[in-house]
Amino acid sequence: MVSDSKANILVIDDEEALRGAVKRILEREGFTVETAGNGESGIALGTAGDYDLALIDLKMPGLSGIDVLRELRKHKPNTVCFITTAYASYETAVEATKMGADGYILKPFTPEELLNHLNPGIKKRQLILEAEALKNEREARLLEIAFERTRLNTVINSIADGVLVVNTDGEVVYYNNAAMKLLNLQDVVIGRPILEELPKEIQEIIFANFTKEVTERKSFSTEVELKPNHELVIEATLSPVMRQNGKLSGVVIVIKNISEFKKVEHLKSQFVSMVAHELKAPVAATLGFLNIILNNEMNLTREQETDFLTRSRVRLSSLLIMVNDLLDISRIEMKTVTREIKEIDLNQIISETLGLFTAEIKKKDLTIIFDPSAGQQTIRADHGEITRLVTNLVSNSIKYNKQSGRVDINCRKQKRYVIFEIVDTGIGLKAEEQAKLFGEFYRAKNEFTKDITGTGLGMPIVKRIVDAYSGKIEVESKYTEGTRFSVYLPFDLTDEEINN
Image (tube, rainbow, N blue to C red; front, side):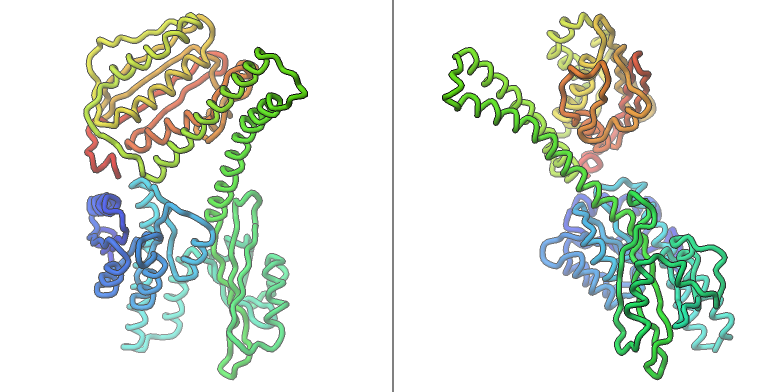
């Protein structure tokens, strides 16, 4: 039987850097890992060897992850398979699940997230092998039926999917704990009528397809939202249970929790709507100005035309900034950023950035407390990305500060991190605003911010840059009093760790 520290894992992914990173992470945890760079070699390895787990990239040149999954399921049905992808959609998730995928891991993922996905898979593999061993033992030694049933119940009760079997009279024949939990059913016992307690969507399928003469083993699926706002969405698959004489004996209902897939779809839809909304205003305003200029009946003066053109330029400039920010977010998340990793001094970047904001600092009469001669604080990183991070935080500390306010900036080392800390005496954030701070297009709206412009993408970019360097960012803020940002950046990362 496999143990947590001895599991054999196959990683199939066309990204060499990602394969190497995952291999290092898993080997550090005591696993035995082999890798394949495409679907063909993945199938060859997966069918020739006996792996406990397989991580399969969805999109690969040549054979896709679904093709690989299909072959592994055909030849190695007991291997626990996870699909990994950066192109999440409900359709691909459902297709992978129907093909027998045991999980769906969204890229990019942290080592902790990867292990959180794999640990249940290892436990499932243990149960599969245990069930297989029990089957072999039964055949060899003819174990008692009661003992076999107990062991089978243990296995079925350990899986995440719900299983419920109902006979033709609508009575419970079999169930596991997952089914009771997902359907929120109480005090269920074998032989109890249960149809009226099931969701109406499931009842409708049963009444429409399983109360008449059934001549073929056809399954039916339906989605049911049991809790609002995608908090709990299930997919129920209903299949007939036939007697040896071909007559219908009952219905087996397999219930999968697809809440996470639905949340991904909802978030994607929300993001598209937000982008469309944010782009609409500057485009509509610019188009309005141009229509006025091109309308000969308006008889505009040269000064009015110049004013409208200037406003159009401002609108288009803000639009270009927004598009560039969106592209930056996309490149970071898709890991298509080309980084030039070298030793850089954070204090030097801070000094250069403050120089760019001299006019704004003078206009607000701000006091800047920063000692550029305090010594180098070096990290290994891309100069452009770290400059972008510092610029966003410095810009916010100035933009959202009070007249004649103060900004304190310092860098220091603590354990394996260089900590960049920036504290302002600005308008601060309410608790509910802090919770939304790193969301795309979010901008705090109150009496202090109505005249302050921005895209609402600066802080999401900061968060993604920090995550890309395996760092962390902390925020402390009090409304009307000020905000403290603390950015922790590891100074000992290798090129491989940064680029993966």
